[in-house]
Length: 436
Image (cartoon, rainbow, N blue to C red; front, top):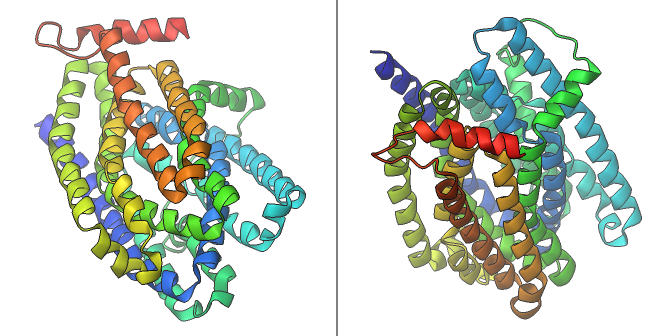
């Protein structure tokens, strides 16, 4: 009875997130082709370049709280005092990091001539960071209140989509396009306020400095692991822009956005399952592993089929989205076609398994290794193959991650078997914590 209720709650949350992902998938189908045709490749590329830089600030502001704070909220959901302490301490930490990251980017834009020429685009794209800090997705995820996230994001997506068609007409509207492309989460927060949906606990807790330091300390491994992924998520666009210009960034960004759209189809499942596995791995590891196996059986064949279809239909997809002027994106999309499957496997192993088993130190080393591989190969591949080289560097890096994760899990002895079930999970995780 209880297990059926839990599965029902997970299913409802996953369906709610799929409603949002449906909008996330549908709005690019409508908006992206329009923007690519109305804006020049150079204008669109400058926005993508600025957003890539803002991606670094988002990683700093998040500081791994998307996983660690969501996990803590999931465990403390029935303790109002502890829940308030987690929420307000996390928000205070994020506020400090938001200020530091935006000031750092402002200084970089003023000092570096290549960035200063598009300072206005960078200023507008800063809304990405503000919205990411304000909207507490981690809090909703930990409480398994993802349907509320679905409501506010749906309202925000629909409003922004309408405004794109009304306000963006020519390449001269580049700043308006940058504003609208950077405002979804900020608009979601505003929608939550308008709809009077609570975005935090009823109680207020005034965070102390020692609590903020402790929250940063406990999230440090996860932050470093997440930050290292920026070496192949945001750095590829950044280095490509510096070496090959905005047009190459536009070609790469189109292929990358289409790949991310396919990849995002599995995100609702992993987000909905994460708080439940956090609970199960803490009380019944065998049940946690059974849930992981069900997730793999559900999502991996579907995403694999999507990757195959992406290779076959790449010319048609690129033509529908960008037109003839974006033909160079076809090869980029085909090179990156395996990425959704690789990222999905890595998300299951990293977020659902390794974080919940306390193996964040090993996860950090894996991400650092993957980032170093990307950074070592990226300039050379871009030099010889341009945007195709950046795509190849991304694919190679994403392929290394799941292999290293499986190797660590097997070496630690935490992978379940018929002989040991999940009994070695706790001891292996304890060894990891002791070693770190």
